[in-house]
Length: 324
Image (cartoon, rainbow, N blue to C red; front, side, top):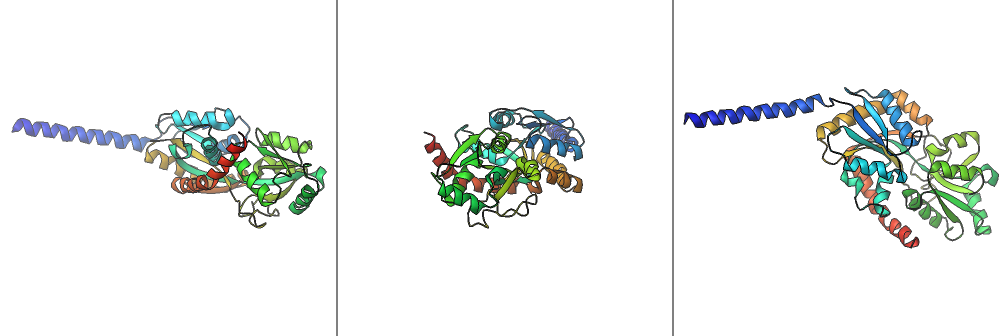
């Protein structure tokens, strides 16, 4: 009986020590620097945003940027997916790109659900624009010219199997321009904007953050924002909803962690990032980048993206069939 009591005592003590140790691990997180994978080259939108967050974030350990670029951001995303869920490696990404990798068939992994959503921090918006050479000031002027001159307009889009392309296909269809304008895919917003400036294309769908400087200089003329509300950076530009076009996919940018990362680590990171988004200086910084501060916690962000997946799946099937 005494031996049994002794064994039970040892079990209780061991369990208590284990629980204390686990609690201490949670309590002391983070105990080392947290790496943030940026899946694009230095100087891009995700890179600039993350470095702005690094400037203002307050954590017990530093947040360290690691650029792992390639394949339109998919290599970095897959690197995060394959990382151990320790809480010390996270991913900065555009959720709509994360969705497009799967819907376009580039990977069989449903990354939007196989990564833990920490939070979204800003909204970006796709904008339909032209150049100053065209002479068009409104969407209606562009549409009228296109219908009077079939085949004359080339319309640039970032990527061929992306949410940007799916949005553009739907907008073109709603405007009655299918088969009248030619869609030209580009590898990134910078390439598309350069083509527009050189008049190699006459219209483009590009991010508000990518065109902010050329809009300011007057070289790019925004005609319509693909959104439900007017972006703060473009308050005078009408939206698709205002024009009766039922396409309004915003482009949030946010943060992910490998599946299985502890809820405590996720909460710590989300809270630290939220404090940054609530900082007026950060808000001013991102607005200068053509972005709009908008903190969305992980579960709400995941639910929003899941709804977009349902909405966009048939359009990606259409794009896939068109490429065969």
